[in-house]
Every structure is written in structure tokens, then in C-alpha cells.
Image 1: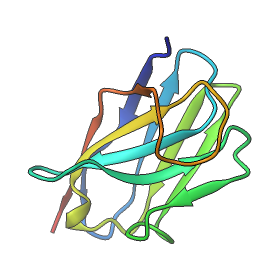
Image 2: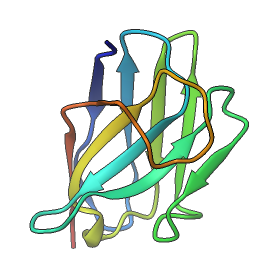
Image 3: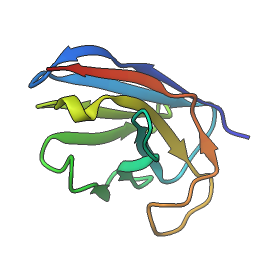
Image 4: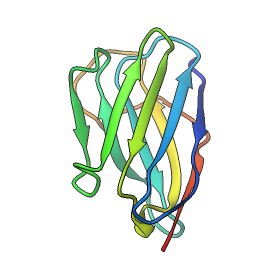
Length: 119
């Protein structure tokens, strides 16, 4: 079992920047960030391979968000720039402990951290 703990998040004005991080209790392979806004379904935001050499972003955040990881710290980061009010959501990280392709399958989830973007 892998435990995921997010940190960061908070309140920021539209156009501002914020960073969230997620630390895993053990080794993981692909990791990702998802978000869920009130009344909406959870959506994929970004994913990163174990090596960090491959990343993938939702069209809605491409060019504004950057995912990265530090395997020595078992931590994945999401740097969010030019935030928009529609980015208000609970951001959760996800991970899997098996190698494989694709960005949609994960076995472990964090509890989430709130990001609020004011207009």
C-alpha cells in the first residue's frame, strides 16, 4: 500500500500562481494530478512517468501548468500559473506502483487539497 499526502493549495487571485505537492510513502511509477470542482466530475489534469521524461496535460491547462517529480523524495509537484476562476477545485494526486503506459489508471489516491481562484 502506498499513502499519498498532498500539501500546498490555498487561495489565489485570477492570473496568479500556486504550487501543490504530493509525497508518496513508497516507490511509485506513473503519477498524476486530478481535480474536482463542486458539482462536477473529477477530471485529469496532468501526468508524469517514473523517470519524469514523459508528461501529459489536459488541454485546459497546457502551457500554464507544469508537473514534475523528485524520486529521491517520492514527491510530485504541480506548478500552476495564470490560474483562472474555473480552476477552483479539490486537487488530488494519484499513483500506481506498476509500470505501464497510459495516464488514466491509478491505484492510490491522496485526500486532496483545495485550490480556490478568486476573480
